[in-house]
Image 1: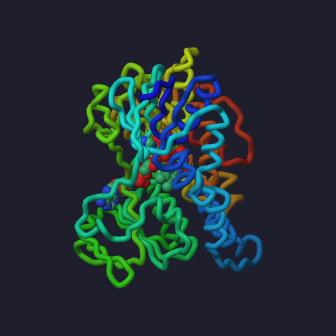
Image 2: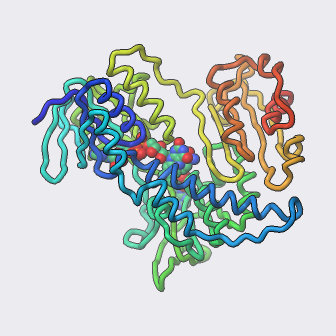
Length: 453
Ligand SMILES: Cc1cc2nc3c(=O)[nH]c(=O)nc-3n(C[C@H](O)[C@H](O)[C@H](O)COP(=O)(O)OP(=O)(O)OC[C@H]3O[C@@H](n4cnc5c(N)ncnc54)[C@H](O)[C@@H]3O)c2cc1C
Ligand SMILES: NC(=O)c1ccc[n+]([C@@H]2O[C@H](COP(=O)([O-])OP(=O)(O)OC[C@H]3O[C@@H](n4cnc5c(N)ncnc54)[C@H](O)[C@@H]3O)[C@@H](O)[C@H]2O)c1
């Protein structure tokens, strides 16, 4: 048993930043991770997936040249993408640089699995087994893993999760994507643009069901144009892998595909983390936290495991608050009412705050405003690839926006102003009386404000 100031279990984006900051502040910090320092985002998530999407976006833009700027012959090549992910993004899934960065700040890294054994103690299984007492804080940043549904025949087949998909060295000839959430959609469109025949199989009645229905409609339209087949209301009842491919039993018919990507959500394992030792329910999905991310006396949690939004920016935002709290600095408690998020399809679907449905469920007197990008000046100029819209959701009594969606080219960037408006509760009157630069996509915000009702 060794005594230190802080133990961080799991070095995802938030845990890595926090552990480094606390070590730089002079605390003795042990950071534990049984995989790679940095977590899912840099190795199997945001960064490599957005590099792939950047490449597929270039292909899509080149294919828009005919009729607008001459001729372009597009011959996709996956090799530079796979190479970039190995050489620039993941260092071939080697975290040496991140470990050294942390150690350079004075931290101590242990590659192993951490488990709470009490309110101040963490057992580490690193092949030797040891235990740390954390005098000041334990921080849990253990993240999530792919959730694989219990479908007959699926277990034991060489299906992909996000991890295998982002390590792909070749583009499959055909791909079935189980799940039409952000992971499934981003990767489906991206692989299709590299010449793969893609089918999305979504159990719900629309893709990206957590966002506005108008976003799902735009995605249906653009995915069809990319040659992606989208099937909703699907129940996959059996999986077989034979002759180098998958046979998927869909009740009425069978779908064949070279590869199967399972993108049906994420799961946590609180029992394995020993949360019962700090008085929490091991069968719960998330660790309950207060505004300072405190889960129990002396224990904080950050990231996906708190259930406040499975995004890197949530993890980083929470880590800053926890750092302030542990260091005894003034704390601005976490607020999620303006939660921004972007699904990096083309068009990007940016959103902040609540959807219209969520606002109505809260019993608000809701007003909405909508403006289609193709009919805006900028959309008219842009032409090919101009799909998208702005949708605003207002609390009519309070006179503020409680939600907004910005779908379109650079929809995630256009979101910025809307995220400020929702976060800072800027009065509608102020938004409606400001200037919006001409001719930008974000001018559609003004048009949507004019249509609020
Ligand atoms: C394909 C994909 C694309 C994504 N794209 C985006 C995006 O564009 N933008 C965005 O904001 N988010 C995106 N996300 C989500 C983002 O990756 C996560 O929200 C982000 O990684 C934050 O997670 P986290 O901090 O909870 O920890 P994680 O990144 O999940 O890391 C947790 C770490 O804890 C370790 N660990 C777990 N249990 C233990 C234990 N008991 N002991 C020791 N170590 C342990 C794991 O090995 C891991 O390294 C994407 C995710 C995926 C899968
Ligand atoms: N751009 C981004 O910020 C980004 C990108 C990727 C992932 N993420 C994060 O990662 C999280 C996980 O993403 P995800 O797409 O795996 O999960 P998700 O939970 O968001 O979506 C999963 C989808 O799979 C469907 N589904 C579930 N079981 C099914 C089944 N048996 N058959 C068919 N469909 C089924 C669900 O109805 C849902 O639409 C996201 O919620 C998001 O927070 C973020």
